[in-house]
Image (cartoon, rainbow, N blue to C red; front, side, top):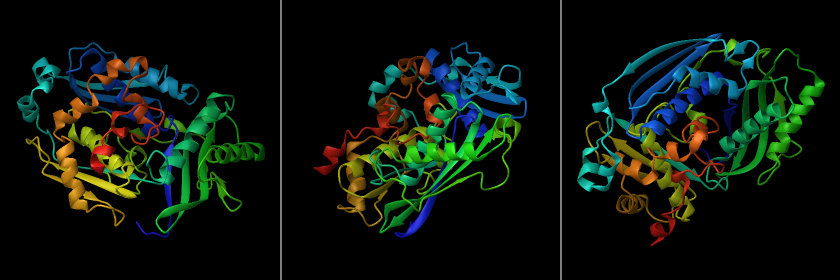
Length: 393
């Protein structure tokens, strides 16, 4: 990352087709774990005009109507009528139900260290966690502000701006100076209207929504901040009627807005036995605590896993020259304080019991929009700064 640059990150509203797929996949994970905390599952979704394809491979002592769940998610996102209607779209399924013996062992075994050691990574994975001092939630400013504008657009649609499509994209460009965010260079919105055309009144309303969202606290727009609406190709219609969606296709939005590394693997649609999901949460927790402890301005934590092994092959820390302690020393401290074995991560964060404790809202479903990290609106265990003091000592 250059210390002086303009960096752009994007977010999308819940009605974006890719995000619809992520939400359906994570709603399925919530539903299966709510009934059976030992469930193992991989759920993927694809959709286009009038058609949803839902694939699931799972072992669970649970009875879940996944097609009905998919329709509920799509309706909640705003598709209850029009060019894509959750109530009457076709849903094709491909389900593989595995024997119950393929489930995870009883959770009580997680109290036994030997049992934890037997829970190995099922896949090879390089996972990364990142944190910085750009924002109060220790997230990069571009993605944090892009999420804020996307939330504002969806809230406006739900609260009176009814012609606005559920599908919208936001991009925020931040000017960095000396490695720190200095000003908001510009905002770009890509939106569609259901049965209505863009006009000056709508443009001004959208511009006001974006600027108001960015004027809440911290860095605010200035007189030179540009706001563009549909500056690219025409966008008369949005949602699945315009472009197809697929689970796991918005990894930059899910993580750090592409300003930092991420594994490339989808986070949504996987139960917590998948180390590419649980490990990404553990790496973020570690990086955030290092920055919160005042030991670095920016920090990336990397964990490398091999299939069939519990301990990560490698734990490394990169503070990009901003660390107050040597990177290798920070890595050794993390290794002593935190257990990065897959089952230990599941135990520490309660990743199998959280869906039941979260109630109807779900635990994984809310993560499928507006990112898995830096979520001040959710009490996520990997966002807690509970080992910052220990890292200082």
